[in-house]
Image 1 (cartoon, rainbow, N blue to C red):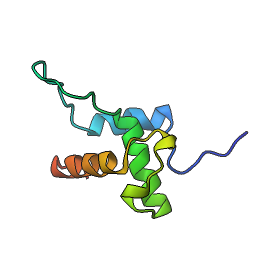
Image 2 (image 1 turned 60 degrees about the vertical axis):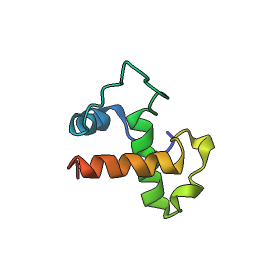
Image 3 (image 1 turned 135 degrees about the horizontal axis):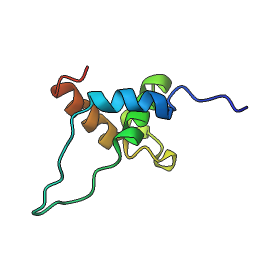
Amino acid sequence: MARRKPWDVDDELWVVIELLLPKIERRTRHPGRKRHPDRLVFQGILFVLHTGIAWEHLPQELGFGSGMTCWRRLAEWTEAGVW
């Protein structure tokens, strides 16, 4: 059995975490770009915190979104009082 990485969030844990995150409704008029999925962004945040890399060095090929996306979402959730 492969060992899970510290930033991987399994389905059971994600159910709990997802309840804590604010729901953002997509604008119907001028909706802009679709948001990157919260779960992937959360895992990207955990990756940066675990590895200690700079936000801008978050590898795009991991699928977490850009480092700036993860940083902004962390700021958004912090402002919303999630942490």
